[in-house]
Image 1: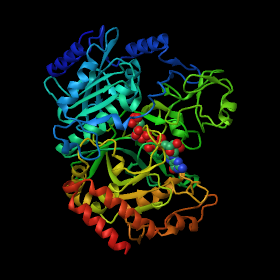
Image 2: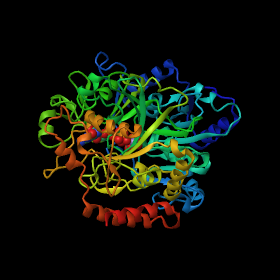
Image 3: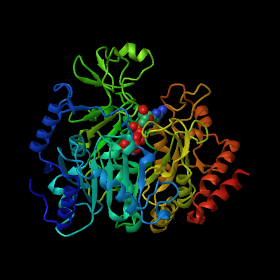
Image 4: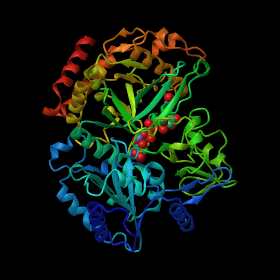
Length: 595
Ligand code: GTP
Ligand code: SPV
Ligand code: MN
């Protein structure tokens, strides 16, 4: 099929990729329903995807990846800047020349006998000044069908690029042999280029997502005066109809999708509160004409964690998956060809196929301590399916942000919520984030690690320069900068159970955050920041949670925090001269306040 653009830069690059990968066929993806239907039918006929119940889950497909290919692979992910120091101490680095030389033979002829799909796409609403164009070539129909949900794709995407610009991100993906020993996820920030090989799992192969919209985009943002962040975006509508927007950065599988779609507790909905979802994973932020910080969601769908999602925990996410959704690595109920995952309900299907493809008796299998769905199994759902999708979702200007919230999984140290003293201190609060690891990346689960701004696996350049960029943005925004907060839904009691009910009840904390932004509620100054008076967190209608429980959740254990300060100091030492002096000042101030 002929090319979809006159842009010679795009066409030249695609020709080079064809010459390298030597596919039997090349198909430009125009985004049309006919073309996607044809690809769906082909994927089903080859067994790559499985058609689900057309009445109960219309338009939905199932896909299973190899058991060795179920999550992002941070140890095989590289930032190949020309200079090593530009990648910084938190990224794997390799000289770009060396990396191209190593990977080129792996791509040479890799698509023989296969079709190369050329996917033009826009990250961000087409026509938005904040949007950017990418082209991904891939030999995977699964990638095409997922990208069709996750991004705005097809010929329209080239409108933003025009016929002459060179400003597009070049993404090359081949599943090759899905060999974990030869798996590489490589970003070349200075070349606007991503090369991914030997994986077929979402975060490694949907190149618009983490590879472009965070790793490459964070680097572009530093150079162009904006920010690319691992943040959800939500709007809180108050009874008077006014909507306040906040963003929140939590590490992978720490609650962004859930917070982004929360349904407030009854006491709030009765008074007229409502939450609108703008984004659940990534925010691109830039100062607007009025000097405030505006955010767009560059994506067009949700690639969400399935386990734990149910009508009670996240009704809106579940509703988003009831049509035109792709399920990856969940379990199948063979009686009616529907899907199941842990905590969907208490009834694992009897006639089940578990995520690796084995037919099992669900209840017996689960009772024996096995999981039917992989802990990082996912749904790919169109944003337009979401019952609470924001009317501003496609607004090219984005939405004005009042508050930025950081958070992670901490069993003890971090309190339920606190506010930073100012932007510089807020940047420090983000930089010292730490969280227990999850199944979203391969490796041990439940180990506390530093994950600044939830960007540890996603920052495309030196983390010290990234913090300097945050400080710089604060200076540009001045008085109009969003207020910065930190939350922790994951404090546990002596039995290891979560104390705070979380999910919809997180609205109670957002309520305080909004009041702080509006200056309508007081706070208590603690060594780590401003905290609510316990009675200012609304516990009305909560079972077993009283103002005393809240006081406990807000307690700051100075000994634990002194330990924490030591950990921060060790972490900061990695950054050497690139650590902004403001960050070491803030650490010194924290220590002084702790006594
Ligand atoms: P990524 O897509 O990997 O970036 O994850 P995410 O940050 O969007 O996380 P998500 O909302 O999918 O939640 C991940 C897991 O955390 C799920 O198993 C949820 O059930 C659980 N979770 C989310 N919010 C809460 C909460 O408020 N409290 C508790 N205890 N668990 C939560
Ligand atoms: C994450 O791991 O933060 C995700 C899923 O959102 S992935 O697309 O795999 O990165
Ligand atoms: Mn994520």
